[in-house]
Length: 317
Length: 272
Ligand SMILES: Cc1ncc(C[n+]2csc(CCOP(=O)(O)OP(=O)(O)O)c2C)c(N)n1
Ligand SMILES: [Mg+2]
Figure 1 (cartoon, rainbow over the protein chains, first blue to last red):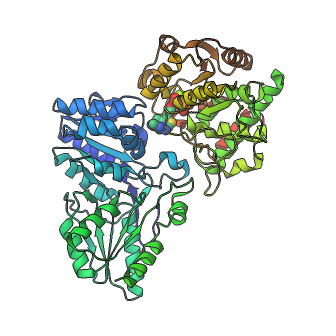
Figure 2 (figure 1 turned 180 degrees about the horizontal axis):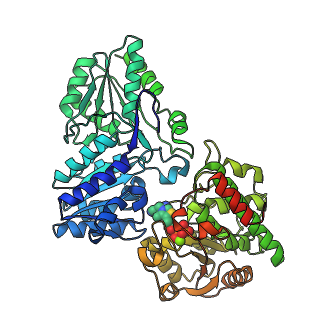
Figure 3 (figure 1 turned 120 degrees about the horizontal axis):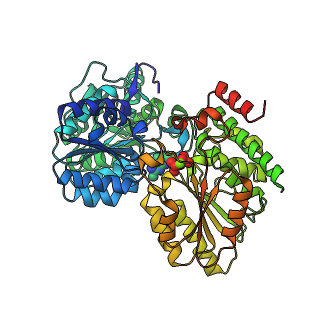
């Protein structure tokens, strides 16, 4: 997917597949379990390199999650992947009972997050996954924006001894971090300084938020941009400083309106520094089939939408 | 409709499938092509009692396409049956079209369930079949699943409940095309002996050549007239049936044909 002003890089799911293969050569305890989607989730790169450490349980997501729980209980380091919606929504109680409750070291990767799966339509779109994953006690939840950051996120996740959910996207992603980046769980990344308002976001929306900031700049509005790739834990200090120093925020996400990044940010700000906040998300409806870029436009997830929301929030400041 | 006419319908549905997925530039033509004869038998072979002018007629028979990624075969059949004009097929997967990538219940007249997350259709079918009993209605419920879809535990949960309630008004058709997304069923998740598994779960099972229309019709009639227990029809099919280069390569799963490939396919099907 192209965003003007950015070089288009590999899809984050592709970057995940490559990073996983790299980790596989560094750690013999790393195993991968799949549910008949390895060519889509890109875990097939690992499976080709390490066939003896990769398992395909067929189209069976609850089994996928349970098997990973068992492997982790025996000291293996399982990574599992499916479409975001099937992994979180189809196997939720298994995520809860077999991984979250015993706090096992399982890395769960949901690809095809958000509405950018596009033409396949709403049944294939992970638009509640962040709400579901962040609700699981003890889970870390990360949403990388581009191929470069995905590698950093995957490597950081591997260093965590506990459950992690990572959301990746289907289409090629604009490169926000072309020169490498340092990802630390719980740390926001300030990509742009700004004094009037803060745009807090992650994933696909990050490039669009930067574009929105350039648009606002032309109107004399100085917008800070915060990358919250670490959704849980979220960087409460960065959010508090953003609220104190800019006085208003917009949270943009490729997700339904309830329980995602917007809810998390609102909760932190309510506690630490209440300021006007605006939200850019899908609202309370499922999207339809269509080309990814068309859908982002139809459902109000463009740079223009972020800028418009910022102007509205500024009036409430 | 006599056999020859049904074969023509099958050829026409194949053309629609190729044309609409290629125009969309995405979709699952190979998974749709394997299901054509069963769908033709249901809609045009006098099996399903339905009325395109009253799509939600309470006594209609139900067809639930649990393997929702084969939506093109369903849309093509519904159009040919008169639910909407065939000219709408070319809007497949476009923003604003009711013909989404996977079927959405009630968005399209004749689409009985929202599917696309594999494993769920048979349970929905059990619900329809139980409701028929509660309401004293004589309709029959047909559910089509993929063979890979048998991997989902929910299929077997549904099978157990259908057997428990003796739902002879429910039929499951397995589009047994031998492949799932990442390889042959026999390698990804072996199912054999599949008929015995269904029988062990309390179902009557019948294995047929899913492209031989006479066998398809015989089996569907037998399933409709089943007594005591529900019937599963294991329809042995070929993924991509009718297009040689798609039949030969399972990697076509989930891929639309390029315009050039589509031309070759239509030629093979006798449309050029
Ligand atoms: C719950 C769920 N998991 C994964 C998928 C992704 N998926 C779509 S089609 C497919 C393979 C289906 O194989 P099969 O049931 O044999 O159907 P065929 O295409 O061969 O007719 C998979 C894994 C899905 N749609 N739903
Ligand atoms: Mg199959």
